[in-house]
Length: 362
Image (cartoon, rainbow, N blue to C red; front, side, top):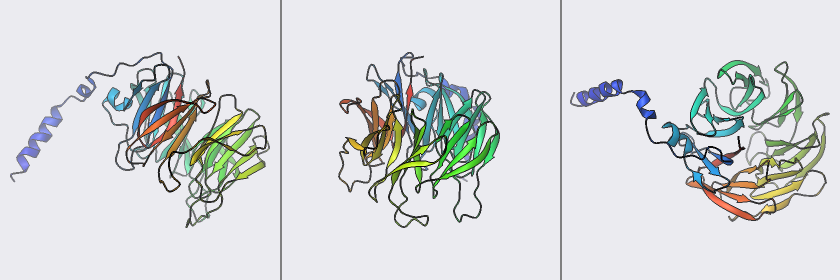
């Protein structure tokens, strides 16, 4: 009984607190007109320590934990990706099942989308419709970005495969069609008709496609990690495929050494140069059949379990930003390189930097 009275007092006091008081504090002084880079840090699974870092390209100054320090609100558990549309940034928080919407000039929270199962990425069809991919729902959510409401879904469940398919990841659009890669125990690229919101076709690719890019010649590039040893779905050499977006036929493949884990395929603003991580950072021109070349060497030995975790290419300057998770436990760092691989800057990130988004001058 002696523990009851203190607990009762805590409950009574908390019930009298004004939630709005949490918003009454000194926010960081932010250069509103700056051109910059957002780094989405996953944090550790089930720890709720995801975070957002903002880096000012001109001054080289960075703002750590920008979401929390602006809104007095934790970002959540496993921040997965971010898309910037006009002056708003949409941060997809996977294990929290939500998308936070912020003003990219002030970092202030302006809305949120909830009711999602395990969201991964958001793709805008137009101002009033967007798709949200999902790891576990076996459907793509349709949302209205103006009202923050879920308005429907696209069923992508594959029955009878023996595996929980299809999980959905990144989305790229070619005309009216949206290409969606299925990574978890899968080897598929789904084709969604954005006018009818239906799944109309499937392209079979290498095992576990984890990232995609669309080049200036309307070629779809798909990077697969090949699975892992002991996987019930299979373990094969990872590789890169070039697919004609119009015919949906594979034109060329590049296979890498088995045991590699390529990821984070990205393309420059001109749509003619690819970059990806496979322990080191590689670069590859899209208009020839040359092999990928090392762009930046990893600073870690082959046995290191951490290292480069994300990559982004500034669409304006073609500068390359490479995130380093180090050991996936401590805060990471981000390296900034010129298009010629010259080191330009380094800045601190949060735990497991996993996605990079670029903010243009408004």
